[in-house]
Length: 247
Image (tube, rainbow, N blue to C red):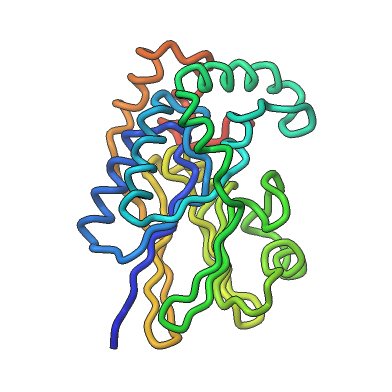
């Protein structure tokens, strides 16, 4: 029987060094299909390189959807979307990012779809960035089964639900279904400074999910923030320690 291997990756956030390491890992594993669940450029030192790498993956057949940070690049960060004390700083980061992207790259982020539905070897998969209805809603690993059913598992025909956004990878089983968070390629928040993605292996209606952690040159990313004159030097600590910038 044929086994299909699908990689779900997300939240690159302009960290091209991390994305390059993940792409090399995917090639070594020989994955059949790739899904990128958004947040390609914003908050990292190499936004243009990150977008170009994702577009190269798309040219080879990867599917890409939009995340909240992609929408921010297109139209800005608005009040109520981030804690008030971070709003002005994040607006400055957005302007810095948008200035380094071409109009074509920004248009690419603007027209990305919101979700994807696949069937792979008899396994039905629904994938999206945060929730199927909202790019900004954070559903955390400790969310109750009721919250997962209400916000994540909205399409009852699916077997497997894959999302991103929170930068905290996990796998849970609820009512005979599986919920997976990919974690983050470029900015993990779980204390492990290694790029994260989810690998799904599907065969004859069965599936297996693993969370892959890929080492990369963290100091290269830190150096790029400094060299590029990134407006928020705190992001260097975020990359090095794999912690949230909101803490």
